[in-house]
Image (cartoon, rainbow, N blue to C red):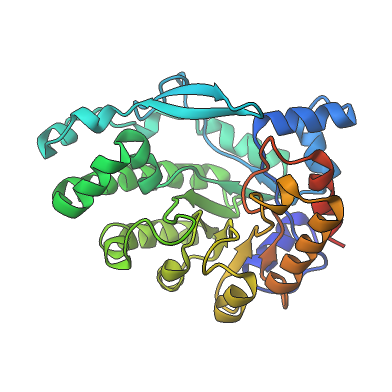
Length: 337
């Protein structure tokens, strides 16, 4: 099997010739891996670990830092292990009426370079190609502080609906133009929306259904119209929303953190015939703090539970951060075979 065939089979929950794998990390980890192996390019690291995925997309034509295309202001903060981007100005915090919100200068899909997409796809014809970025809830949390956003959802539903619907309208056009430019080569549309905390959902299922169910269906339908799968990223204890994601047509879920209700054996037994799982090897405990042997044992446990019968893609439960020893990253990928 090629990497593309392997991932597509896993997303159909079929058995594959070997376990498909993905890789994500913060910048300092990639820099350290390149230094460790004497590599000049990140692509060499992906090849070393035999990673099945590559990311593609249409870059923004203008500057993206410190002010992103949505108008959010960012700052890089050094944590002692890595650089972390943090919001320093929420542009919608001073916009409290629906009329002001409608007048906000939203990004234009024309401001992205779709000519780059086909060239990126052609560079990796045998790899599984994934595209997508933060979803409507995640971007909204960068535009408006979370306290205000939750008040909107509870007390100003017209404002909140317009905000999320306006974002999805942008994403539907932007993503469709990427899919069209990819000419059938893009395999996965992935959006990032963190609906969970360490102990439960950020809001109840009725509120999720009110604000996000219909728009999730629209994004899923878009991916499927172009022959791609839809992958939902959501950190945290999101078990309550999984049946609704499946009902929307979501094909795979990641990152499967080691938190309440997300036990790998339970998830596989309940949803393994309808959902592919992606990730699961704990980046909060065993990867940063465990020994190489402990990482191997935990990775084997996750593979055996989520990968039974197919429908699993190996990765950590988040991108590798600066506190993860490089030998633990190596140990994870050594467990593929």
